[in-house]
Image 1 (tube, one colour):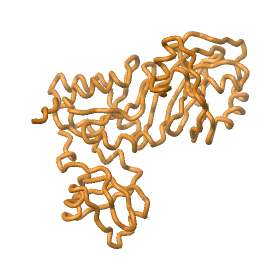
Image 2 (cartoon, rainbow, N blue to C red):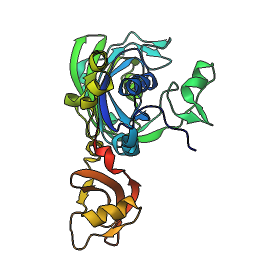
Image 3 (cartoon, helix red, strand yellow):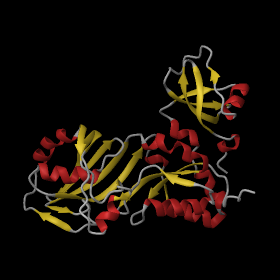
Length: 311
């Protein structure tokens, strides 16, 4: 007999406003406990010194994590000029100093080189794997970590404020795999000085914006007052993660076929094109994610009928 999973079969997205000082893994563990959920994961790591949006998937929502991680992200971050650190943020030891402080005109002149598709070398202290080990684990053990530059997409990078000569606040909109810490490091070098991130806040991930976020302290207060049932209404439906995909509405018989792992012919419905990834719903309930091949919806991930309920 299969061992019964601990927790409840709760499913949905919790859009957490991660506080300062905890890892993304620790945040997921807290949320899983508050919701008494059987399964949880997150879409995009935030460092302990970063705050802001950490989308956490519970239950069946974990099947949609890749679609959120592939979305654009928006960050607000403060850069300190004149010092480069081993971690490219305020947590690391200072490894280089410069007396030069760039002015606004110089910074703005350098920004176009950091917009579009650029080659970026990730920080040594990052979650990228090197021969099976995380780069940050190797770096903490004193090993010299050499990571290859890779293409990333920066859609927008602009100055928000210059509170003093040592600090500039930026906002960036970028694609998957972009490191804001690396932008700060490389921008400092390009401007003839050094730089690192002293404050970082994520404002958007894929389909989720600032209005979706909830603070951890607020969730804890709700839980203290009513347990898992009190926090359940804060979940966002699974299909919110699929906002950039085309929706295909399935009939009773088509939904039944999908849940049995079978496809169905679209029969003249023009909403999806061949080769496109789509999601199918039945009476407003998510049924499957799949691809269109020669006019047929073929499921790749199927959701049980009860997953539309967050409670």
